[in-house]
Length: 170
Image (cartoon, rainbow, N blue to C red; front, top):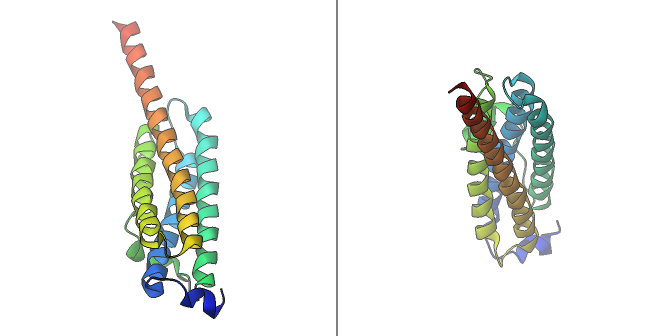
């Protein structure tokens, strides 16, 4: 991004870069959480949900690409060390130590809800001040909302399946 382009932004660019580096850290953690969780997952509907979680992982990686590009455009330096991801981000990472599908989905749902909050904050911070970042944040926010909806639907489907099995046993 050219100097004039940064100068016309009506916001604290340093703070925005900090917000974007936090989001970048969270995207890498989300990518790995989806990716490893999909591979470790056990339980009902695994074969249907695994490819979708891998798709979500790819989308999180694409978010990371968009965010890192924007940080560089703004004249910032993206977070360079993976060991900084947990301290910069607030969404955390839940290892799939118990690979049961519902636990993995709950972990991913928690991460999506955190990401939704992050991108809402970035969109609000840039609204009317930095149209490029605002549009990027809004686009990512929409995908995070879709991810949340997908996960909620899978959890509902699993719960209905368990309920139907209970009825059969009675």
